[in-house]
Image (cartoon, rainbow, N blue to C red):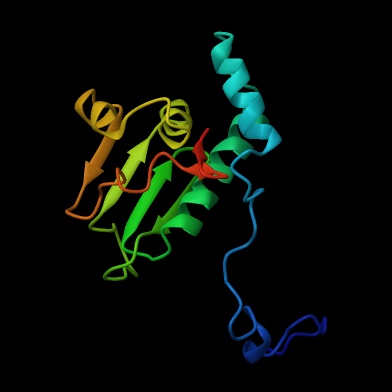
Length: 149
């Protein structure tokens, strides 16, 4: 049955234009965003950051990782706030990726800002790692203006 509302678009017009990213911009790409600063301040005071602030901080740091290590061979997950694919190599397209890094939001903030060492986080079980490429030690901590946060 044909669409009577006139809202249907031809399939060719769905999706990004050629050369554009299919990913929406979900947060500030700046490592030193206000959300990262606010989340770290709350943690320093022994408080739990507000949920929207923590979400924005996690997403900003995930975006920074994806910018620093472009590719699609490793999936980094920080539930419930976000996930990115990064690091060049064999591309994953369907099902569970062979190279996965998963951690909680607090651990991710500490890793990305240099407050926690990658090896220590893995040894302590604060990061779940699977696959031969799932080692982020080369890319962490993320740096802003040449210095760790």
